[in-house]
Length: 92
Image (cartoon, one colour):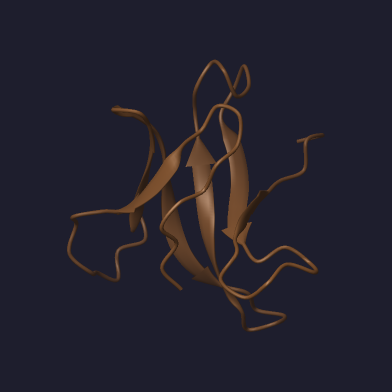
């Protein structure tokens, strides 16, 4: 799964990181940008229960929340294949 764009308020894009593929989980596969400003990163993951691929996101920007926001980028229930959504629990 290679996401090309995710949008919300404020709008942001998810771009493939230039880092080389590695087994080190600390290096992100994606950078999340709002304009020219990096506001987060994403890592490829596979659900243990369903086996589906998704991207685990870590976002930090004052416009989003007073602290770091952890979310997933993946297919939301009822959405068409290839259409991705940012999914998180706002109570976190």
